[in-house]
Amino acid sequence: MVSIAVAIAAAGAVITSGVPGTAGPLPVTTAAQPGPTYVYKVHAPLGEQSQNLLSRGFDVLEQREGDSLFVLGGKDEGARLQQAGFTAVVDQVMAPPQWTPPAKKSQDVSAADINETFYGGYHTVNAHYSHLDAVAAQYPALSTLVDYGDSWKKTQGAGGYDLRAICITKKNAGDCALDPNAPKPRFFVMGQLHARELTTGDVAWRWIDHLTSSYGTDAGVTALLDSTEVWVVPQANPDGVNIVQQGGNSPIYQRKNANGTNGSNCSGSASSQLGIDLNRNTSSHWGGQGTSSAPCDQTYKGPSANSEVETKALQALWRSLYKDKRGTAPGDAAPADTTGVVVSMHSYSNLILFPWGYDSNQKAGNDAPLRKMGTDLQAIAGAGWTSGQPGEVLYNAAGATDDWVYDDLGVASFVWEIGPSSGSCSGFFPTYSCQAGTFWPKVKPMLTYAANKAANPYGTTTPPPTGCDKQTNDTDVAIPDRGAAVTSTITIAGCTGNASATSQVEVHIKHTYRGDLVVDLVAPDGTSYRLKSSGSDSADNIDTTYTTNLSTELRNGDWKLKVQDVAAQDVGNIDSWSLTV
Image (cartoon, rainbow, N blue to C red; front, side, top):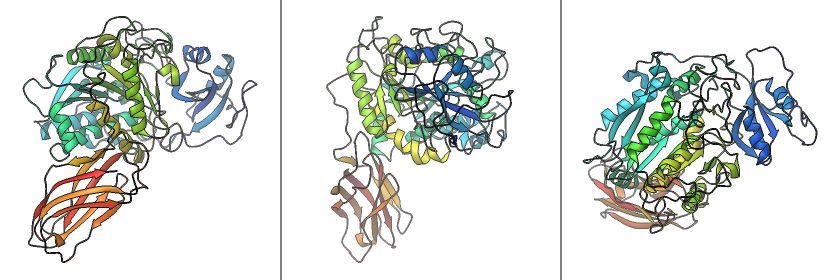
């Protein structure tokens, strides 16, 4: 399946007059039947019109284009929009692909489940949980697993899952304890609170692996884990993800949790589903703008604030990790020495959002540093990304988790909407190859920056790292005699634009008979730049600065020094290297 790939051929037709379009007319409504899912482009400028659209229960995507929002639904959704008085065109259509369910639906996790995937490579809930077990077993000095509650289905004795987190740090006494007075600052990131947002769970998986496998070899990761606890919840809504994955190669568009107590007669279409929206359910201005009281709507707020077990469990976990240091008024600021950063990953639209989300006219007491972090993250992410309060760049939405974290605890909190709004890597179900090729290289430096800010998100004594100054990795890496190439990594984050035509690569290698060595610089996109070829130079060691034209490469990302000994009898190691891009 190529998500959001096939455009309707006809152009310019609209339901009501006044707004030109470039997409096709509304589909003819027929009796309910399996079929394509449509994306409707709806005229809804910021302010009253966009909030009116949200209040009527449509499945409004986290995507804005000028004065237009986008609504997901079946053939009948266009007629509903028309009846509600909105102007809309069919923007895109997603045809249903072949249906193949996951190979296993059991909720008893085993080690073998780590390989269970659906839709081209996305990991099932069982695979994620098996992965957490494997990481904890392989890296006991770095990782601690935490069961922080049960999903709704598990509380009902109807299957369901534990709610699981992993704490990653170089463990010392007191680390990873459920105690807000812990010795280290904490960075918290979660995925798939909205179950259908597949990219976020995959990014969480890769972030866990990056941290644990790079400790001791990557200077940046080592310094981070020596000083900071990194908490990851890969799938905050596992019941919902289980619904999504049952579609196999045609994932189900389940956004909410699986609580069917309210709205058990929902049709199951993209715009009528059981469950409660966990990102509208918190007590932070619950029931305000951008929420719905209709149980089948995608933004259904639930019967009461904090009604859902998944919501309560997350809040209890956050309260056990962070001190409450902010007053109760919306304009109250947390003090400058407040630590911690919380990121809730969502998809899509390439947005960085921060409080307040319930009303863009209300500014947080810490608006200036939150906004500065947002613009820093926007610069790291690059072209096409936007940052701001939700109502400034998308629409107001009350009861969200990022508002609750800041409201209740004063901790710096963000929502990242990961993924473009068009192209083969857009939508909730991008082709799996987009994860390694597009999303991970983009989001990893964002996560690295945010994690390093956990010690001082609001303070002004330490300016945000630009990553554009000289960066050094001084971790020794042994070079095997006439063996495979080895690498050492430097991560550049916080820069903008391309690298310099006169970039400097300073290399220090201890090795007898340096003529045996081949040295390359590997750019984040995989392009290799030869710094030194093998030869007959019998002198020892390399202490050289190479000037290299890297002007076609983006600065941000993982740069690798690659060294190989191609002849026998001499040994050595990479002592250190530095990069100025």
